[in-house]
Image (cartoon, rainbow, N blue to C red; front, side):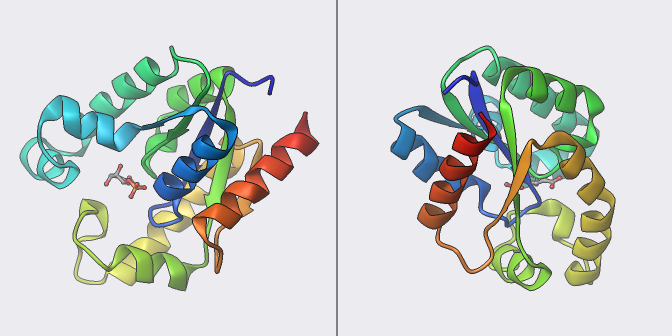
Length: 172
Ligand code: S3P
């Protein structure tokens, strides 16, 4: 494979973390999850970072972690859904990796994300409406950043990983 890294973007609940794990195992690359790296470095959960230090602080740490991750090669990198809000992140991701966007239907996203309270941005009175608004504003950014998209609706992580491998073969 020609690309230095494969990087998964997409809205919360589209399956980036689990698909990245399967994909990495299949192509024998290492996997790296930006949110996990942030939690390790900060020694607190994403929800705690948001509530104690605020979103702008989180975005700065997220950018630093992305830059660090992109220094490596042959990694499948999974990202948080908001990585695309900073245009500099999009530029860096595109220059050092093949960016793949995972998508899923709204109902599937909602059912996956409402299972726990790990996502501070959806921790609102009307989480479905919040999700719709965020999705609307993020969609063009995901489209702009990604080389191609793969739908994970009704798919297992393993099936989605296989689809990505097939598409990567077609794009090279
Ligand atoms: C966020 C998505 C989360 C996490 C943080 C912010 C976002 O990651 O980075 O809560 O802005 O969409 P997941 O996409 O893995 O849920």
